[in-house]
Length: 204
Image (cartoon, rainbow, N blue to C red; front, side):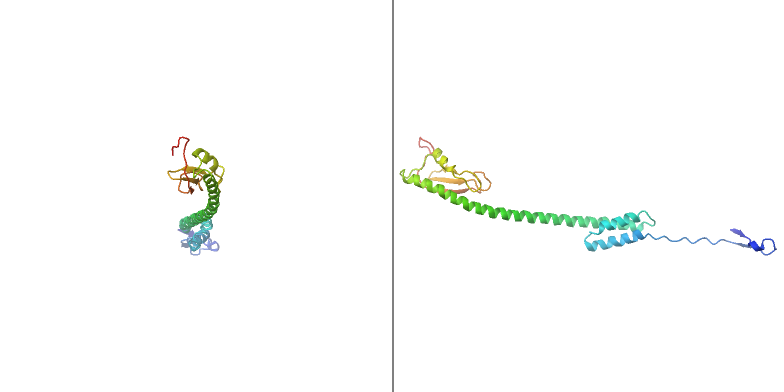
């Protein structure tokens, strides 16, 4: 309680005023950083979360001022928006990588088909060479070692030498194919008719 005597009445015998001081009304503070940060955090979801980093920055500044309620809620929304944007970016990158891998696979497949066509021509050239030998040797082909010496002179489109394989009936000219490894599923072969021996003893 305040004891108040007006200055001009202190010594004049006038009534004394006794009353209570009116308490000052506290001014309510408003955190504009938090307000705008929270609003931008909500709006960022309409942009798939790509504005969330900017909203997070505003909310971080808002956390340094009172009241912090909106800034705190805005930070949570901003982090969720950034997670959404990150997930979408990861999905986009993964999708692009798969599409690029499929494209490269199609290009490689087309290249291998063309190289396979060229290799087929090389096999036919080698086959014709063995056919000429067979014509002048009563239907016999060279022995296995000699035949392979002829075969390795011919290279397929992948730069590997051909191989001569003796079978029970005739022989096969073989290309290792795109993987450059013999006896796999992508080998290219061409049959050579004629009688052939694996060794001088006549063993097939």
